[in-house]
Amino acid sequence: MDEQLHEMVREVVRSIPRGRVATYGDVAELSRAPSPRLVGQVLNQDGHDLPWHRVLRANGTCAPHIADTQLQLLREEGVAVVDGRVDLRAHRWERAVREKAEEPPGLW
Image 1 (cartoon, helix red, strand yellow):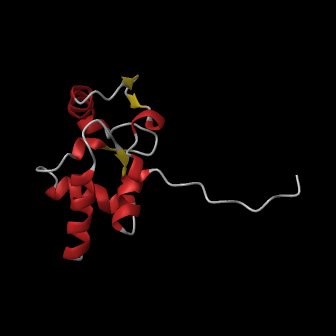
Image 2 (cartoon, rainbow, N blue to C red):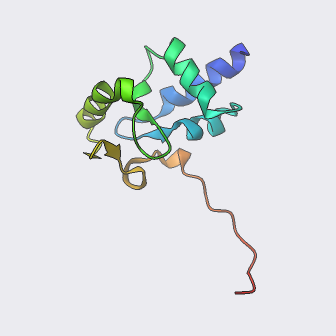
């Protein structure tokens, strides 16, 4: 992997504020990584010093093998967790929220 891309992914994750979350896809888009899986690889291999717990799946859940630790860290930051899921509408990092593109008026 390109070192510049690797560092860009790390920088985006480092920028996620306390009490906010982003999805792997959000981080990929903001860092211009080719896929959310690449973000997961960077965090798995080189994310120990980052707020990795603020990065979630697209449905607001955690990867099963880290869920207990991740959810505890998020709760400590004031992120509400219900049934193992974070409400992305309430806690998603504002920078990660994509503006809905203006759609031309339809026929219906």
